[in-house]
Length: 340
Ligand code: TRP
Image (cartoon, rainbow, N blue to C red):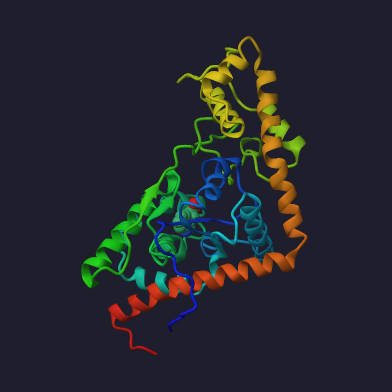
């Protein structure tokens, strides 16, 4: 199936990234570590951003909630600055090539490779009653997401590096057998990306599935909730706002403050010299509230206009299909599927 009207992703390097719609919102960590940068990449790269709802069902979801969260997450990436005119923004399940390529790639991915994935081991320990095949082959679907768009660069956090490595291995293996079918993707770690830790346990990454509600700030948390979470952030007993190895709680708060205000670590140390942690925590909370206010407002406006959102995700899916179908057609031909 050729689609001649499909837009071409040309010249500029291609960036692909995906985010799960699990809670309809993202954490401050997702935002400062990834999504905030997505909008900045749109002029220099051809970007495709997907709400990966097919990945989400590898753990059990409430269907009504998943549907609602998917739309909310889509609106949220737009509210964070992803421009549907510049980038391809779409919902994974709308673009059938993802499932189709994932199947083929499953047949070029080894059981042993998938068994070594630390996320699989972690998630199967956490969901011991539902260690399904999708949870196991999750990385093949992720590889399909990436490889369908001939992606050059994938912005991913440390927790996804192993999956990206596997996507590269699969691409190299397939290319080795059949010629240059896939661009082999590289990881992309923007210099400005912040690694945000839990507010309750700064030794751990901020995670949306943390059981401690105070550990994680969500983008759609109301302002007073955000302030409360920062006020209860775990620090140390020294009462010194300084970036040092033995002060993970304060370091984390400083990184957050720096990421939202643009102030350097030295500037923050100077600004808060002689001040207590109470003042500093409040300042960080307020800065985060101000950073998120326009995003929350835009998100609410977008969700109130379902017709506009629908036109965006439909247009995104069409563009995504046009590009990805070309890759899938090649793959089908290479593996020997009879043309239809
Ligand atoms: N596995 C990623 C995560 O949980 C989400 C994801 C799915 C992704 N497909 C992707 C990220 C492709 C980058 C590229 O964070």
